[in-house]
Length: 123
Image 1 (cartoon, rainbow, N blue to C red):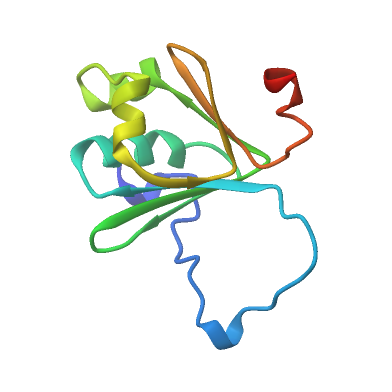
Image 2 (spheres, helix red, strand yellow):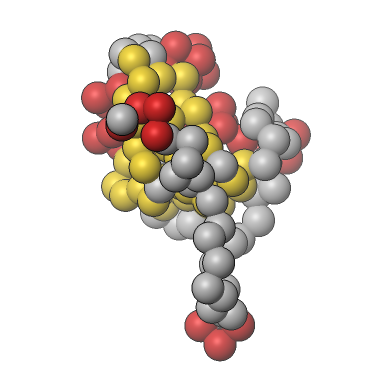
């Protein structure tokens, strides 16, 4: 699948400091930043097919942002990658994340931006 045919917006989410407006609101956003690699590109390609996901490519980084939650399915990423992707390999590839990360099972890692939705996993 070519980059241009993905449903992700693929635009640069970064702004100049002078253009940033700080609000006292909750955004419910979540995301990951990864060093650019074969694995990171497979994850970005998989997530770029989902609605309401923004994939931003930088020279050495790939950032994936979403609203509410992001669900990463290891078996589906493995298909795109052409080799096994495990939750452990996924976590190694994510340099940083924001939102609450939950490993739901061996196949699913979910990032939550909506803290109310995560209660079922932590109570």
